Image 1 (tube, rainbow, N blue to C red):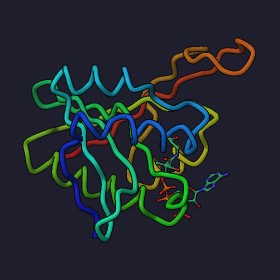
Image 2: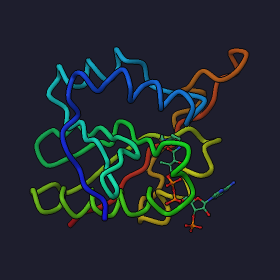
Image 3: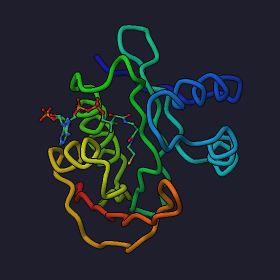
Image 4: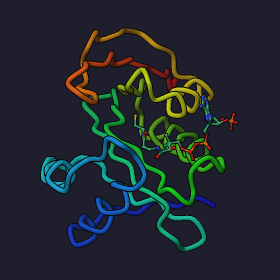
Length: 148
Ligand SMILES: CC(C)(COP(=O)(O)OP(=O)(O)OC[C@H]1O[C@@H](n2cnc3c(N)ncnc32)[C@H](O)[C@@H]1OP(=O)(O)O)[C@@H](O)C(=O)NCCC(=O)NCCS
């Protein structure tokens, strides 16, 4: 079973270290510290007592935005991402959120598959939004899932 708990400040360095080997585009410790400072909902994700990733959600009124989600390398492609998104959606709906938004690189096919499987749809494309490789810019897909 997936469990969430708040990210504590003294866990950030270790999370960022593990994220660096989980994705080519990791967050920095500063990104995560800034999210904690901004009182974003930074959640440690545990399975059977082990930390398997983290996610960050920022909510304004009744709209939530998933700012980051990482499943650490040994746990990827085992269905955890799907379970995490389902649990997150259920909890956000329970707390009165109407929509959840996110942005994903067009080349991130695994994340895109995960979001489509959990009922997100592309609502906009931000052309050449992300830096990638040798300054080639990459599109961002803005996705939304209705929680009502
Ligand atoms: C993206 C991420 C959160 C997904 O979590 P996960 O636990 O690996 O995801 P799941 O195993 O639940 O689902 C992945 C799906 O991608 C599919 N998939 C795998 N390789 C794929 C590919 N090359 N093209 C399309 N789909 C693919 C899998 O088949 C699976 O779908 P299925 O369960 O219907 O078979 C995780 O891989 C991760 O942390 N990646 C690095 C960080 C990142 O990219 N975060 C997203 C930022 S927007």
